[in-house]
Amino acid sequence: MLGWVLTFLIVALIAGVLGFTGIAGASIEIAKVIFFIAVILFLVSVVFGMFRGRGSAG
Image (tube, rainbow, N blue to C red; front, side):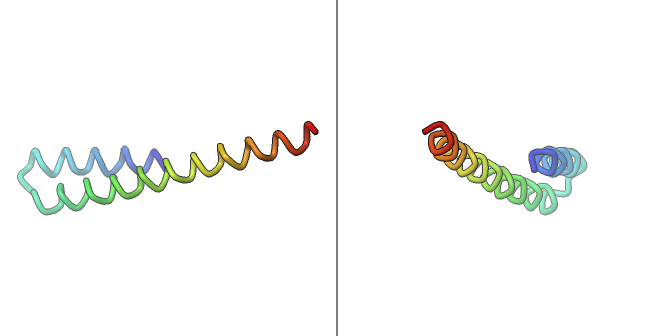
């Protein structure tokens, strides 16, 4: 997922340099959404990993 974020950020930078502000703004928004989804999924996996680790150790 973070690869997609980097892709959209690069597209936004290139579009911004070339003057396509609409495409650049849309790419930044998509990158932000995907980044926050990735962070939320990471935190969920960490929490479930902690609970799973405790259950199997006990």
